[in-house]
Image (cartoon, rainbow, N blue to C red):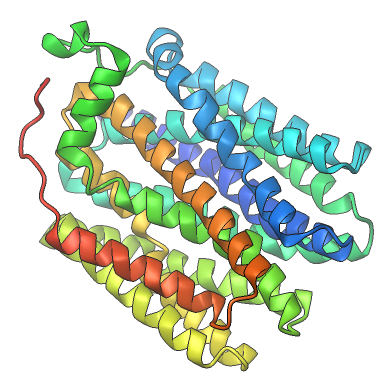
Length: 392
């Protein structure tokens, strides 16, 4: 039993390190490319549209991910996803083109989703209910750490425009190589009625029992993409320098890192829903206050940190909530849906942000974020879910 525990521990920590690849690549790419395009005079609408490539890739590949995972297991999917990520990163400096970079972001979106989906499903499949919140919180912390480090590489663009891409590609390759130390494994076999159902029928069944949980990945996707892709453009136009913007974004990620594990453990003790509501409400208030004092860089940085303490964990809270509500044989479907809702939120963020900047609205961009989180809070407060799966 001790040997088995050691194997489980080794697997868990390697998966945690690997998933930081996804956070790191996204955390760096969004503000980096937005800043480069803004400096080159690319319109804010086209800038926001280009940022969607990462998430269009996720949506395109999502319907085709579950079958290969069940057939080949977790390890091959992680290997394929990792290769796509670091090769695409290394290709960026070869040719500067809006279309070419969009294609590369599309490929990184596919690779990131393969990494996320495989590692996420693997961890939720072997985690007990008593440690689920803790394990997923550590998983989210790993993503958040990578995401926080990402923007710090943006100023390297002042040395050589291709340098951030090259350095991040090499770091991603190093972390990805750890997967070869793992023994392959497979998700639970679908049993009973669920085994006979079509792919989209399982989707419908999983959404029926866990739709409230998917608001977490959706909300985090919106925040991540809008703050990292469009807020830098808004802040640059407001007179904030690129280095300060990087630290503001890092403060949000750092807040999420600090609270990730405590909130995960708290959700194990008092329940997922109360903690989820607290996170959304706190985030909405924090961004509302930030919109009032946005002329002060220090104040905005502090409030981004406080907002991160609350909403920096809604992705991992959503995953653990989904894992609690969903039958074990439908966990791959549930994890796949987490990725899909994350991507939908991520697409919504740059789209609304691009429209906001194009129309030059007379209210703060941060107020838009606050209203969005407030809406999620209201939906979560009044929403209800079924207690049992119709295909379990």
